[in-house]
Image 1 (cartoon, helix red, strand yellow):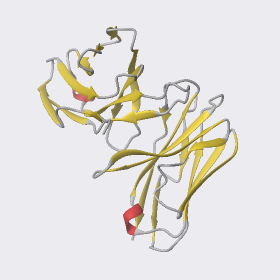
Image 2: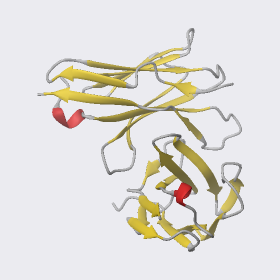
Image 3: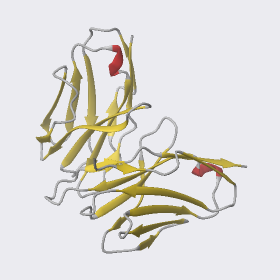
Amino acid sequence: DAGVIQSPRHEVTEMGQEVTLRCKPISGHNSLFWYRQTMMRGLELLIYFNNNVPIDDSGMPEDRFSAKMPNASFSTLKIQPSEPRDSAVYFCASSSSETQYFGPGTRLLVL
Amino acid sequence: GESVGLHLPTLSVQEGDNSIINCAYSNSASDYFIWYKQESGKGPQFIIDIRSNMDKRQGQRVTVLLNKTVKHLSLQIAATQPGDSAVYFCAENRDQTGANNLFFGTGTRLTVIP
């Protein structure tokens, strides 16, 4: 079975550019989560969806971050404009119960 | 404030020895706990979980112990192998509304010495 799929795996961009991260959850899972991981702050929940509806976006750092889930098999996390402090690994996870299954992550570097 | 935390940020063990990774939680209402393993360059991988109505659960070479009295969770790895080297996270589900929202600890880095 395919797990959670994320793209791109690596992204290098310049400050001010728009960045779009993509996630395909495990088929049949009705919850999707976006996390950010840094050495300083560890694993932080940014936002999660239940049945394609955003439930809690209190972890989204600021208005530069937005997330969408247009259907059950696809979600995006967008940063516009990007800043160097956004550099991190961004994980998507999905679940059908309490157990979340993580994707491989997107390593983002903003110069 | 409420948090999930680990006592030891790093742990080194000899190959073949048993490892014990600890985690403290502060929300007595949490009813579900998970251990994840994260290898370098990969996403966290589910290892084992336990519900609050249990004290112990065993998997293959791993055992999770839950002490609700002192709000303490531990992961025991038997006969530790080099492939066990990773960062281990505990996570708790504090939300009794049914949302599948997990709160993660800061992680413990386990290094297995050959």
